[in-house]
Length: 444
Image (cartoon, rainbow, N blue to C red):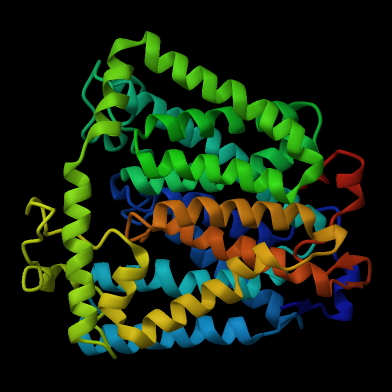
C-alpha cells in the first residue's frame, strides 16, 4: 500500500511535522485515556476530541490532492468493518455505547489508521513526531502504573486511583484502568522507545531511556503473566528484526529482568504479589469455561455468530460444566480474541479477521524488506508479537493496542513502494538520512 502526493506538496516544509501527523499522534496517545471519562474535557474523552481533529486534518490533505491507495489488505479490512456493522445493526448493538465504540475502536479506526498511515505520516518529521509522542506517553503511563501498583494514592488524581489501596502492592491498571490494556500498551511501545534511543542524542536520548525503563517497570507491575510474556516477545522480536540494535537491546533487557527478580526477592509485599499471580489458577478456569462457551456459540451459529457484542448476554446459555475446570466466574467475555470474534461474528467474520492478520502483521514478519524499512518493520513486528501474547488471553478490545497495531503495520508495509515527490517522502517508513546520522529530524 502506498500513497501519492500532489505536486502542490512541494511547498510543504519537509522538516516540520504536518498537522495531520500532529493530530494523529495526539489521537493515538490520548486514546489511552478513553476509558477514564472522569478525566475528560467537557465530559468527552480527550482522545475522541483529538480523533475528530485528526479526521478533519486528513480530509484537508485529501482535498489538497493526496490520495490513499487501497490494496487487497485494505479491502479485507473494509469488508470486515462492513460485516461487523451489519452484525451490530442486526443485533441492535450498534446504537448501544459498548457496541458502537467497540466497532469504532476495534474495527473501523484500526482500518482507517492502516489506510491513511502513508498520508498522515508521510515525511521523516511526521514519523519522528510519532516516535517521540509515543515514548513520552509511555513515561507518563509508567509513572501512573507505578503509583497505582505501590498504592501511592496521594500522587494520583481521583479518577486514576479507582480501586487503588494505599500502601498495598497491587496490579497497575494505568490510565485505561484495565490491566491487560495497560500492559499491552506498554509492551507494544518497546520498539518505539528502542528506535528513539538508538537514533537520538541529548534530551531525547534521555527521554528514550526513561521511556524504555519506565514501560519495562510498568509491564512488570501489571502483575499479569500475558503482559510479562508480551514484553519478552517484543524485546526478542525487535532484536531479531534489527541486527544493529541486537546487542544494545539484549544489554538493556538483561539488567531490567535482573532488577525485577531482585525487587521481587527483596521486597516482601512485591514478592508475595508476584507469587500470587504466578500461582493463581482461578483465572485460568474462568477463561477455560468462557472460551469453551465461545466454541459452542460458533458451532451453533457458524455463519453469523451470536451478533456483535452479544457474547455477554448469551454466555450463560452456552456455559457447560467441564471435566477438568470447575465453574467459577463465567459472565465475562471470551478471553481469546480469535474465539471472541468467531463467537460473535461467525466463520465469515473470523475468516476476515484472520485474513487481515495474515496479510498485515504476519506479512511484516515473513517478507523481506529493503534497508529503509528496517526500523518500522522492527517496530511493527515487536508490536505484533506483544499484541498477540495479550490477545490470546483477552478479548483485546483496547483502543491504543488496536490503533497502533494497524498504524505501525501500515507504515511497515509501505516502504517497499516508497517514492519521493517534491522533496517530501511519500512512504510511511523510508529511513531518513537524519536517522543515519543518529539524530531524529525535528518534529517542528
